[in-house]
Image (cartoon, rainbow, N blue to C red; front, side, top):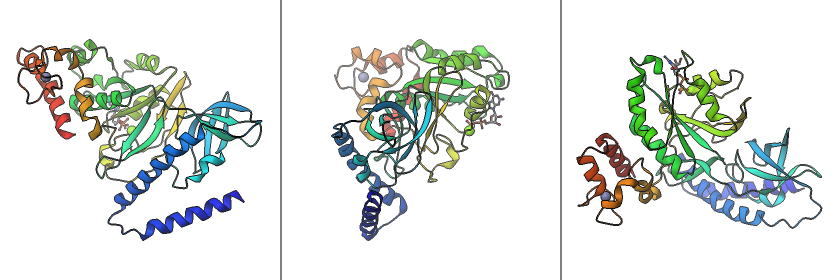
Length: 354
Ligand SMILES: Nc1nc2c(ncn2[C@@H]2O[C@H](COP(=O)(O)OP(=O)(O)O)[C@@H](O)[C@H]2O)c(=O)[nH]1
Ligand SMILES: [Mg+2]
Ligand SMILES: [Zn+2]
């Protein structure tokens, strides 16, 4: 009965959308998503008030969203297929973000395993639509840390990219961890550690790994243990190799975060949580093209870019952007060599790009 009605609605919606003149497929996707996001907000509000009685609610975690209304949920030791409660079903767009992998939910275990409530998210992992970077698409939630993976060589270490990922992580309320991989390719480990020391001094976790020699893998495992992590970084940095080294039987999909060569390719936004055998989850997520820096975050950048906030006391202007202003504490630090000019330039590049 219910199902039938939903189907009807879906059809109506589709017809409506197809009446809009479509210039290209990206535009279409964005429109759908923004409408979906508004609907989602309303529903999450609604979802807080459960009118039903005699429910036996148990807390679970969504490992994967399988279809519009079906989710794989871990409740205690069991992995179960649950459906979204009726109140949530009113949105009939193609899945995405009513619920997402990583969501904590309350499931009615007295009957047919319905998700009745969605617990407020502590953070979300998102990507932004290519078109204008304005539409956020949520792909996972409640994530502890991002393992920003770079290789020392092949491809060459790109600190600018690391800076970008750090800022994106912080804006999304996710802890950044820096992993410099392929240290077997470095002539001296001291040189590599020299590079990492800038971040270490600022309190970041930096680990140096090699899948070849096994160096740093134990430390990496310690860092991942009992936390929910996502690996991100340039294609070829060694993310898949590291994950395989940590747990060979983990079945990872082939698509991956920020895969440089896949830019512009439309892939599914569904992600899933995979359990480490040493505790915690790996967020396996395909096709993030750009990891969450948004135009609206421009103002926040100066507060989160590594090492800047400690230098702003001498800025003449309270809202100094440390770019064109006179009497700027950051510029002074760059001039007297106490803040690395390369990192300052990296800051300006990100500022500019927003
Ligand atoms: N020398 C060396 N090569 C590595 C290391 N880790 C990965 N690789 C190689 O780098 C290439 C890319 O690795 P991959 O895991 O696919 O990178 P991903 O794109 O980040 O997932 C592969 O040929 C790996 O064998 C490492 O620690 N040392
Ligand atoms: Mg890979
Ligand atoms: Zn300044």
